[in-house]
Length: 275
Image (cartoon, rainbow, N blue to C red; front, side, top):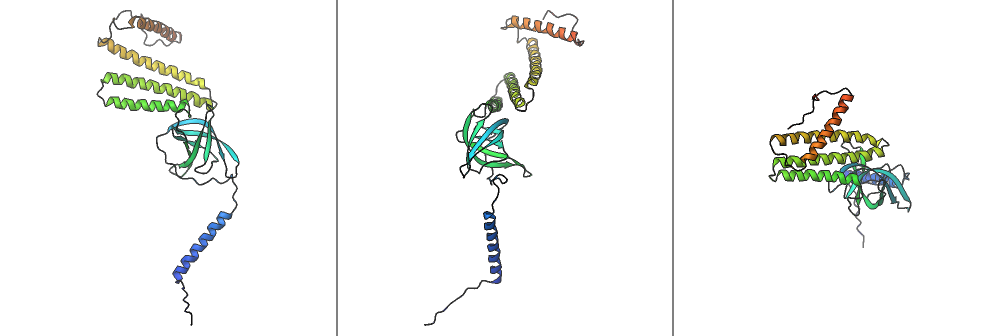
């Protein structure tokens, strides 16, 4: 009995397509078999997708992880943006996405575990850093810098809530001024730490604090003057005697300072002693 043999011959167009696919497959296999130096090539990472807003920071950290070969690597990094769930680290060498990491905050000495979840790039494609997620979310790991920034942001949210609650404008202004003062004090703490990290003199922050204190005192003095004019402050207001003595002593010292430096502009010839 004769055997019928049918041979399928692909069309020229299909044959060319198959040849093209085979060549690409061969090139990919050849590329996979090419030996690449470990240090010169960074592993591909997926794009970062963070769950909450981060706050800018400058926090030095050590990152430690284990390679598939069993070798442990340690790399110096700097946290650029942080939140309770993780942060963005500036690193030159980094592990594969999904690898487990051990992070050590060099300011506090505290360590925690994290995983590398992705990368971030600028609009023009420049590499900005790697995103890490803390295994156990923490608001304390990143230290006082993060906590102060978060507190300042929370106070701003509270201000918006108060504004929509029909609170007296005078109380709202008082709260806004207090929040502003807290934010500037928090900024001073952050600036002190950053200047220490950058090997700059942190004592240069103190004159800025003094200038802010003078601005705040001037602001309060004008507010109290307005209260006196509106008879909202009287001799019966608690603390008036101590306030008067403090103002009198301050006036004398400021007058002496300005006169000694030859800048007495605006000072009255005689000190006013009556309301």
